[in-house]
Image (cartoon, rainbow, N blue to C red; front, side, top):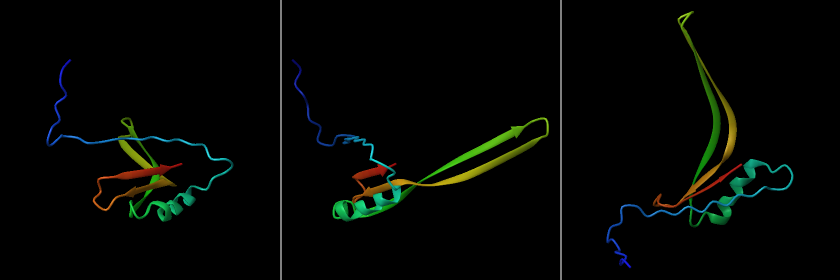
Length: 92
C-alpha cells in the first residue's frame, strides 16, 4: 500500500459542514441576527445576505434592450472570523 505524504504547505485546506433544518411555524428570518450573540466571539464579522432577481429582454425587432431588478429582501447572514478564514452561513 502507498504511503501517504503530508505536504508542508498544502494548496487547499477546507471543510464544509452542511446542516439543514426546517423550523416549526413561520420563522422570521431576521431572528437569525440573534445568532451573533452566540457565535460572535469566534465569528465577529457579520454580513447580511440579500436576495434579488434580475431580468433583461432583448427585442431585435424593436432594437430595444430592457432590464429590471427586484430586491426580495433578507435571506440570511454570513458570520466570518476576524482573519476571514472561517465562515458560517445561516439562510432561510
